[in-house]
Image 1 (cartoon, rainbow, N blue to C red):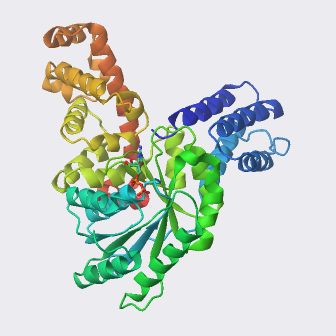
Image 2: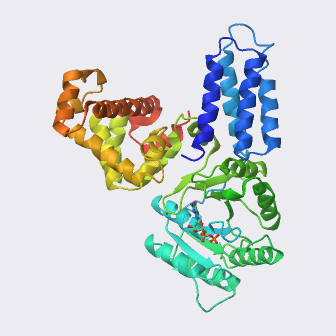
Image 3: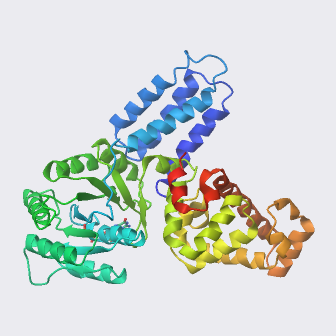
Length: 461
Ligand code: GDP
């Protein structure tokens, strides 16, 4: 998971504070100092961290808290809220609407990940039922059109570009006009970048923005949305870069790329939010499906190991075939995570690569079971677990009570699958851990309705 180590450190510090015998000024200060150190190490700006510390101390006024108040919870809640605030610009983000077709322009420096992100964005919306199209108005980068064409072809998305026309404005206008005529409801225009924030780049962006707007029969003078794509690896420089782009073109929202495993990602996220720009997605890899909706509250929940149910549901809708969704929901709604469900989901992971993204939304799963870069070992482990489950009886697979696995059963399963007893016990421990996580779904209101979209809406309630 993105920033997993930072999350682990903050969670560990909170746990230590909660285990303290007394909660006094010193306990609070020690806890906040450790969180400050962790955030600074992950490149969050000193100014933001200091502000967070001051606010928490104001909220948690230990002297004023009467005996009986749960100080531990108050501190924990304040830390959670302030982390959310740090990542939330407090402005709603524009979302395209199928009813009014939208033109979305992507801007950013060369190498930030614009072309890759355009395709991810389109692919994401295509799965949500949009009829999207891609226009390559990036005439600065050699091979940009080929790159976009290759990505678009893979995802079966209509595209437009030219090998002979070098005027990005003309390409953008022609492409947008063409896809308007074809009734596409989401038209994405990829624009040129430069290696640095140069005046020529901003001038070109302005021209493309104006031209795509004028080309619309809608008579608007600008695209419906300008998305600024920024590389997270630049750390604290993110604030200045986001400001510069905002001043030059009407940036509506931001997508931050290369959040996969980069220690400094926290700096970029908080710096961009500080420019009051809503971050809508983060890129977590080079592949099309390595793309996650960004929303401060679920992100912090996930960071602190509490699971990101919104992201989970979103991904579930994307990757689980529609006809299988009601059945999975039905199982989840009962909250009984029996071993057979674990077996089926392991099967899904092995059959459908993207499911690892679904599981990465659940605390502990991807980080521990499927660490990035160790997919082969993780797959081997999953297969081993499945072999052991193959040696179980139906009754065992359908029981939600791990206590049924007494010594003789464990020995029988180990013998039957050719594994050793400790491996079977490891597998059962894994099952217990997952069952606890999945059990939380039971608490979500919506499930009786058997409707994923209602789950999405209610997940944070
Ligand atoms: P552009 O010049 O802004 O259009 O950037 P590209 O889309 O060509 O991306 C530059 C490089 O970054 C390519 O090698 C991409 O595969 C890579 N890239 C883009 N997004 C991500 C991401 O989220 N994670 C990782 N690891 N690489 C990415």
